Length: 79
Image 1 (tube, one colour):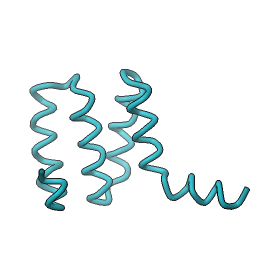
Image 2: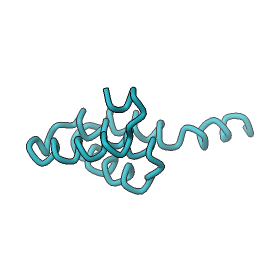
Image 3: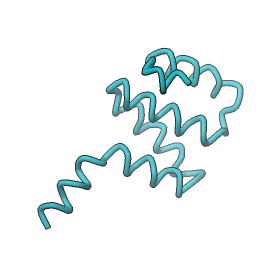
């Protein structure tokens, strides 16, 4: 809901607290990365990606594609 309301900093804060309670919740970690990206914090999103890469390759790939969406599109266009 916070992401939809474009309250990214608040979403990051809430998701960080929630992950302390459920550190293995992959979807929560993914959503945290999306909130961090929306808040223009790519480095923090990449940290979440590294966690997901170890536990959920499919979700990690989805996040990777989101993080580098602009790069993947430009690579396809230049081919």
